[in-house]
Image (cartoon, rainbow, N blue to C red; front, side, top):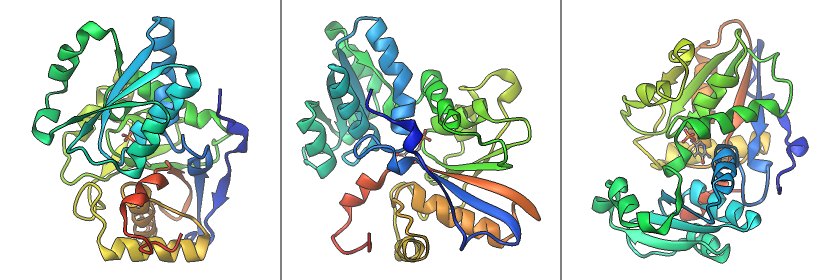
Length: 293
Ligand SMILES: *Cc1c(COP(=O)(O)O)cnc(C)c1O
């Protein structure tokens, strides 16, 4: 439909590369003005399945700045499907949610306590015959879609592929698509989310259940936390490389890679590919002027 994969660029990050270690970034943030990053990849096969099943309404879950909700609303509109978003929290219309309603998404606000009981919500709406997608697109179908990120180009020269991790669905996709010589590394953006390895493993076949590493030291205090040190890093990175990042995922990824490079984590020779998984729309939650881009 709307996505032209041939336009996706891979940028070298010269200021980060050290000696024989080269770093490049796959610019999924530039995929599309609304459906940027990994979300369309994770959604694609769910939406295909929904259409095959003859479903006309797709429902899912997310927060007020959710990249998943933004991508779902737009993709559904493009495909002529109705969309419903169950939104955690109070009835506040963020720019993300405003855009989603403009794409025709119907919103239901759910208080943070009740939000934990997603199965309850699904049951309540079972009579509607909606096609439900897990929050963040978590699931094997999402991972299968994320694996197609590595179909965009020939990535065989890379020795390490590294991305930011929320639910781990994208990382599972990277593991599915990786070549035997490639190491897959995830930077968790949640604090102490130690069930994550298990959740990712459950999306993978037996022989690949442990074929990835997770690093838990780069969350900057927790999900969506963005202390000044992170903001300063993101602004400096933009000045040096004209690379915009987001406060929830990719800013933390780039910070992690910079730190790992300084510690020789990748060894003496390596070709490191970072996945810029998008999410820039989420920066709208910041006061104007916080970021220079
Ligand atoms: C959702 C998202 C991620 C995390 O993807 P998961 O598959 O949930 O791990 C990473 N980066 C961005 C920008 C995202 O929007």
